[in-house]
Length: 307
Image (cartoon, rainbow, N blue to C red; front, side, top):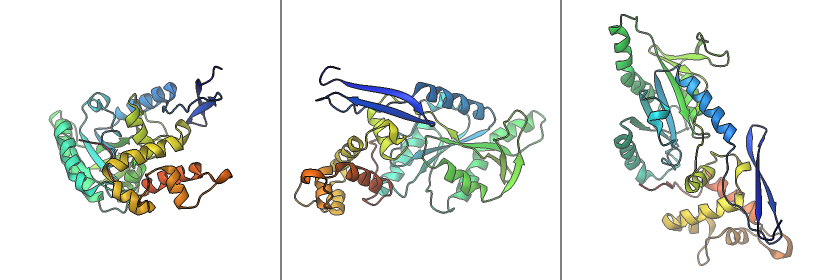
């Protein structure tokens, strides 16, 4: 292999996306994030199968990256089904931007947008009431056709790790009455009566990560919505520090005690005395540390996407 050329092979590995790196002497790290096309196709097929079963969609976004965690052409994806958008993990995003993003999303999509968190069940009644409100036209249409009204059928959908399962779990805790499998539905897909007017599909719909925008892909990596095998931690942590430095520089300096030095992985590692051979900073350990700090909200509450 010629010097300076980087080879990247992609293959399926235990259900995740695996990126195999082979670097020639003097070569540079390939910092692109890749997905396996078969994985995307399968996710799309499974999502469409579930969408055919439901009347209303709860789409979950990560409030820290409300644009990057959305699919884009969701009207096509969801076939214009009634939709409620949950701007989730809003306890980890910038409080000064949450209401602004809620307004922007509602104006752009025409859907109801709710600010929610994964902590506790305080949002449960709000979500249920909005489902009942938005599904009224669906039930009214059934009645006009001479059909008996039935509970509205709901599915929770979104990118990986935005809080779909947590949303399902807190809604199910409201009522643990299993309805069982519907005709034409696999045994794994069960319905739960969460309200006298609502049945919830107890398995989430995973929106495929069909991304070509590397900036959006990086932000998905920051919030752990992409498997770690598909990106380099050191590169991701360095890019995260760059983004945070433009908007939340003082938070970084205060948390990592970086008064008079550049905000880099190396300097953070040195401040913590994480040293490897020849007195060099342990950037591998420190990169993971920085990503975990961000994901847990320890550095501060941040929103990375711009209006």
